[in-house]
Figure (cartoon, rainbow, N blue to C red):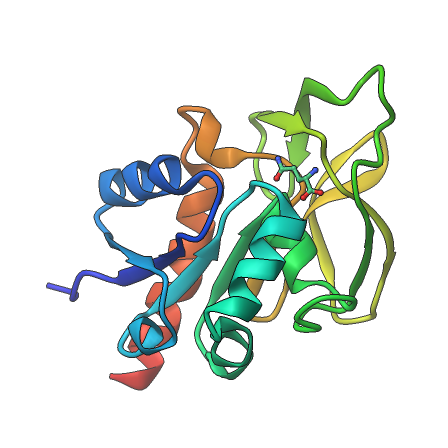
Length: 188
Ligand code: GLN
């Protein structure tokens, strides 16, 4: 049997528990990460939603910025986590993102999304969500809302502008874990 993937969840601020619970349901071992050395021996890392300015500040304060840049395994960023990975922050994913870009009246909303390669709609919970303004040639779109990308992948990275950890639908986390397992397989 395959080894259980050990997935770090950046736990400085934001939706940590929800990701943890979902990853556990899917057979992974969640590990809360607050220090650079905790990234060692992880098979993947989740950067949760929350407040990107707070997360960015704490990441710098705890010396995690460079450690995350050096981390070579799959990454999954949701909402504020997507902002953290963008060109302007950690510079790992080739995206320009605008924060809180759905306007005041619709700051938070829910919508059914079309998921690439899947007939069943994906229910997305958007909370003061970021919007993709520009994306590089290596970025693929995995789900859209009204023609705009809301779930994207670039190589070993997946980012969502919504919160898949806040519904009971595990498909986005499953896709991330598929990436993680593929990489574990390559290393083995
Ligand atoms: N609006 C938040 C930010 O800019 C992101 C919201 C979220 O993660 N739910 O950081």
